[in-house]
Image 1 (spheres, one colour):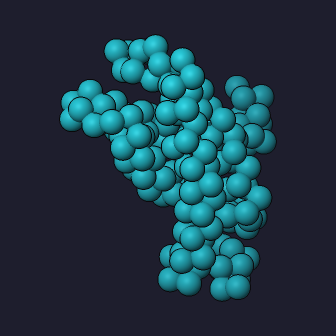
Image 2 (cartoon, rainbow, N blue to C red):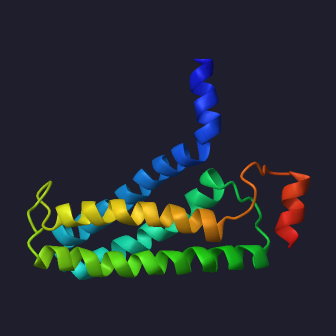
Image 3 (cartoon, one colour):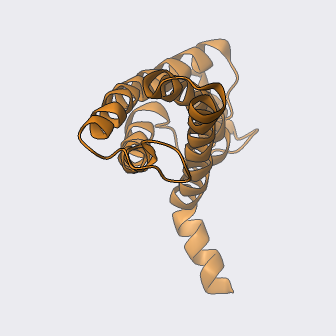
Length: 159
């Protein structure tokens, strides 16, 4: 049991990112599937709306649980949110273009009864990796050991 605890402490960020990434991906897929199947919207429109819902969910979970960024100062939030959204726009453009492209190229077979879901799954894996790299290296660059009330963290947040 102690070995598991040590491994979790060592890889906490990656483990929590993976879990929140899976949840974010599920938000994306559920919104996509609902828009395509229930509402009957096009693949492109459904994909764009699914992306927006996933970005909002991802920002909140990444900020609080993965990278433990606890500052709520308006200037800090603005900078962090703009960087987060900007990096997600880059991967979002890739996703919005890649899913319909892969569907047109033949990866349109249904999965769970949803047209183009195999293309959606493949692109989602690539996007998840890219999003971690951008978040780690650009958006949430503060020390990962920052906790609420942490003096060093509070000093970093003022910068």
